[in-house]
Amino acid sequence: MNRAIGTIYRKEMKDMLRDKRALIAVVSYVFGFPLLFGFLFYLMSDDRAADVKTTIAIDGMAQAPGLVAYLEREGYAVTASESETVPTGLPQGADALVVLPDNYAERLRSGQQASVWIYVDETSRATSERGMKASEALLGYNQQIAAVRLVARGVPTGLMTPMQISKGDVSQASFINKVMGNMVMLLFTLAPFVVGLSVALDALAGERERQSLASLMVMPISSATITIGKWAMIASFGLIGTLATMAVNLIVINLLPADLLPFTLKVTAPGMMLALLQLVTLCMFVASLQLVVSIHAKSFKEGQTYMSMMMMVPAIVGYSKIYGDSKLPDFVNYLPIFSDMESLGSIFFAGVVDVQLTLAAMTAGLVGTALCLSLTIKRLSSEHMLAEA
Picture 1 (cartoon, rainbow, N blue to C red):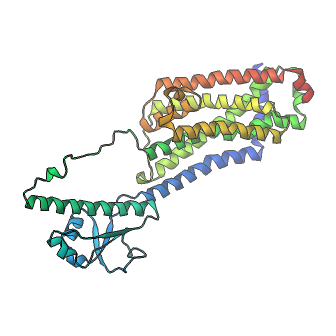
Picture 2: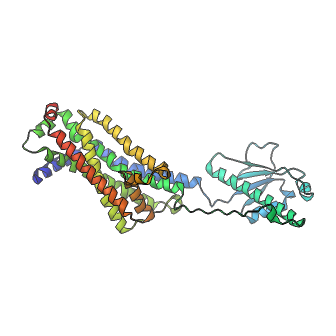
Picture 3: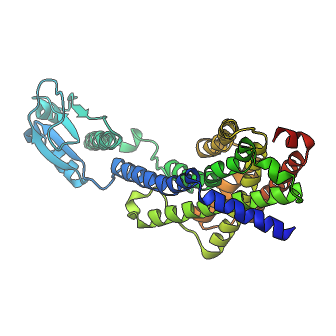
């Protein structure tokens, strides 16, 4: 039986290596998505550049030396400007425009309220954030003047601000870090589905369409031998594509400058070994699941329809994990795909191996593989299957 399985495996592998569709699917997924993610990280880093010095242009700067000194002390660049009555844009190189009234200094000396306008550009996230910083700086100067006036009149400043509020972030990772990290993990878990799709369809649905499956079924070999041989080929194809996807992604991530990435890799050698073992079981399960779908299709085109419907399931599960992680109950993390993403994320981004999650993912993969293979063998050994083939 082992020799027969090996023969079928080698035959199927040679056929699939000659299949241009399968090779194109592997190459496009392995190299296309890492380049796309690298480009996205570049756009994100450019959009959230925090080290750029915010420049504030002031119309009427000569009558506000105190404001200028305060802004420069807080790290802002200040430039003079002359604006229109109602500005239609910001001065060249400015992130915000502050327009002071003509009687600003006089009203400030007399303790009266001065009407100050600030204009910002909210076209992009970066310009919006720098404009918000400029607004916060004006509010800080406003509070400083109010505090000085209260002290001059003998009024404790604590009466105006009974609470001093400080903000701290206790989350282990920011939202954007977790979203992008989960997207990378989804890329790993979707790899066996995408890479093995074409070869799984051709292994059974394609052979039924070419009427070559019937010739294979009448040979003196069992349905289990045929199924396991084809399954081993699909699993190997999926594993090779998945490992290549992971390797290319990790190389791209390590080659990118650290400031372009919204996360950091903390993977260890033991964690990498467990991740590889977990991906092996995932590829085994996906290959067996794809065989179940393929054997119920009478043609390659019909199988594509079924496979497309099946591909929606891991995609929905993955995006639910990405965007609704905080709303999902804890037990969801022990379900297939969920457990794979959570366990791999913990290994790669936290440097921690969650034994329960890893065991849950591997157990789900092995149980699912056994169940799907038994269903395929039962279907392949039925008389109806031989008549339809």
